[in-house]
Image 1 (cartoon, rainbow, N blue to C red):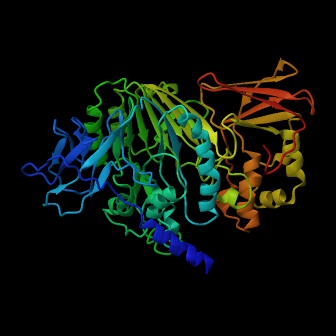
Image 2 (cartoon, rainbow, N blue to C red):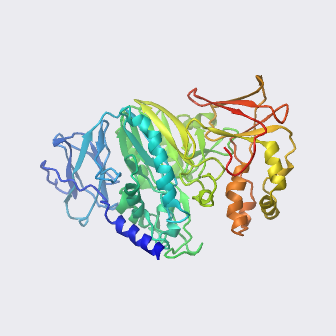
Length: 568
């Protein structure tokens, strides 16, 4: 009864959120001949000139009267503006989604008016919270964890910037929901927008869609990818668009091609396997070419927000990079980005941290201007580890969290904010003597390894007095130094499984639930692991990690250090 009541409340709350801009200007506007969308863009009642306005296919600029007109077929069902430098789109009440778009309501042949209001703001200095894979499904205590743990800690982290008067925004990188549960648990993408308002999310939020934000009730045909976005477009508007915040040009794209072929896991309302591929549609690329042509200064930082990482290391160790799109759209996107000297791609999807520098792959010089930031999930591993009472862990054992970007004019810096820890904590040290003892004596570990013998059995760890250090957001230009009694120790980077992930996530997900799927018999090796060997079992070591910007994170590791699910 309680669950049914909660679901009814969620549905009732969802319909109270305005889905679009409803602003009506007093400025005069009328459609030009052939135009089907027209209107104005203003600030404080005064027209704004040169603001890009688009239907997703064409881009026009407002005239000196703030007017625009588009001859549109209205295929995407919305019209949106590219917010110019020094302005913000308004938000309404507790709703944190900026009103930079409007839903089209008339038929394709009928002209309709949509106006937009902006407010002036000095945002040359600003902060971006990049969040990904929130995966609210109304189960595993996800709503409570998001409301009571993540959001308060994000608010606390951002307060330091608010006190300085620095505007703060969020880029949400997709998979805010989980479509396989939409109809079982009555929580879909529209509910997520209401959840943002309900929990008091602390910043304006610009969204992009992930594979799990598509509607799995959409039958498989030649239009599935477009039709499956209908609920998303009604709730969050365009699936691709751009904004200017200060001197940075941000572009949000949809790089998931939803297929949903018949078959797959059965769930209420879902008609297919929910499969997908990675590409950027020709329509998006044609629009993007127009959009980037308006950015005439090629030193302007370009930030691309997508769900799945586009540029990522093949194995994380040798600097070689894969372009994680189909060949045609991958080459086209790279060509469009190549004229710009400073490009960042922000992504989620993999539920892990991985920073990929295009310049490290000298065989692909066209990537040298690009950095891809793959960001761990807010949900960790779909809220499973926290749902089992353990720490909030990503798919390879790093803490759940988000990434904070601080922008000062065109200077961009960043750091990882783990949800359950301070931003001053960027790594975890494992005393491998203790890990070995735990694995050798714990009954649940034995059951796990009996079913999954290919996973790492740390009971067989042979190197005495060694320490493994997991640096959560390590990048190629970071440094790690370790000393024992002032003497430097050799640091060796070597892929390994995070032992806390095995005991805090994998064992509850298999042994506790008596689910022994063969897919768990593959090692989950992380490339951000560093190994040192101390002279004795009880000597302390000093660890210093230096990030891309010279900031140092230090920790004195007292040894022996116990190992457990909740260790820090």
